[in-house]
Length: 412
Image (cartoon, rainbow, N blue to C red; front, side, top):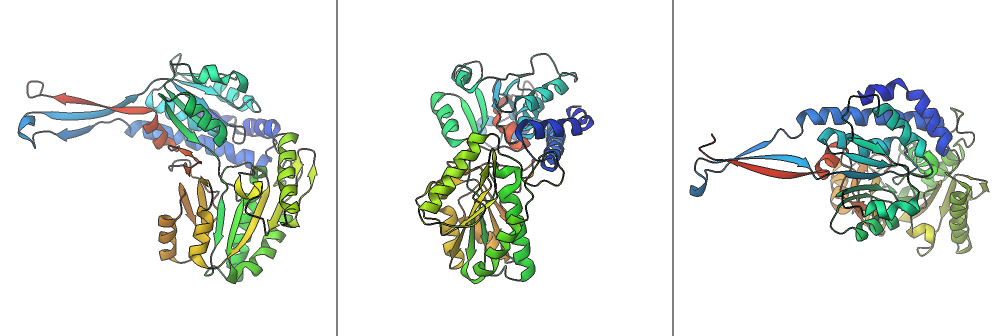
């Protein structure tokens, strides 16, 4: 029912998302489509979830005539805290799994984008869900500590910055916390990905997914790590593809890159780029701010100790780095406090499996940028990129716990 209601008002919601956070309309429409899928996946999983697992106990003498049945039950009320960058889909990722397992949820949308969460609430109000199964509660960030620490909500699902996420977890050590935090996604281009067609594809995907959502995605491309054998041919292609990104009015379907969520965010990105350039980085394109809009930017020769090399930029900026060989490339990916996702451009299947083993991230995307997420797959990171996993089925597990029932021979 929720899925059909979202589908019915898809264009209205897309226009709202674009107006509320400056997301180009083509990306906003894509977000609505993804939210529809999230509710569909949750409905499908609800049919399969909690059917119970039967286990023989008579394999031991003390278990003769006994059978164990294990099912999952909600841990309690979920507090779902959503960010501004995907104000509908990430709300859906909190709400849909909770509905599927029967866990009441209080959804707290981002203060910058409350309307997307509220319109989802309006649609849920049209369903026959029982009273109290969900609430949408816009709350200012300075009022959050009391809500987070409320003992009536034993589960917290948070998507946002690592600083805030770990502060929440530290403040409620007895609660179950799922934290989907930041990243500084790396795209690795290896030496076997070397034809003109290969490099054009890699450059196009890197340019698109370093700048989509204005770079305000935790899996946007921030770091390009290219083998020395392809670096000199790849980098001009990346610059050309970045410069081809259309920046402008987010309501125009032709716009690729809109403004950041506010002018302060653009000023922060500007300050990080300026710091890197002053420290010796080479500005290949971009580097200009106009109000809340920051031009798509490419930097080379970035010193390892500047902010933009270490932190999540959350803006339309990427850096390029030359390495010698696969081992150095993978080491460069892992040389980060974050570990969300990485993309590896290669044709070699054995290299793909080595990347899966070697890269300290939650997801490895082969043949594409790190910015791919299917809403049904497990999604999350390691190191300071988070704890636990989203993705409908995986969130359902996080919201519940196992409870076993032992049936004796008398009951059977």
